Image (cartoon, rainbow, N blue to C red; front, side, top):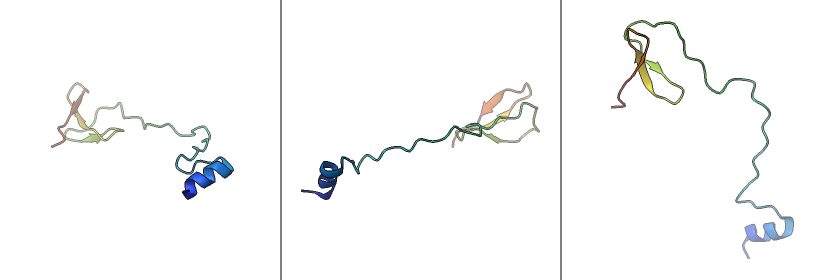
Length: 67
């Protein structure tokens, strides 16, 4: 009998699937806010998930290729 099986049968704890601890409520926002003010020409911004973009003359995001 494997030790994991023995511990599960004796204690009821499954060591392969540990319980997830309950976290307290978040005090900080998950995603940082992006500046709404127009930025300088040529400045590259990095989004919350790693996407790179710059702002055009109208303030719209123009995403850069990941090459």
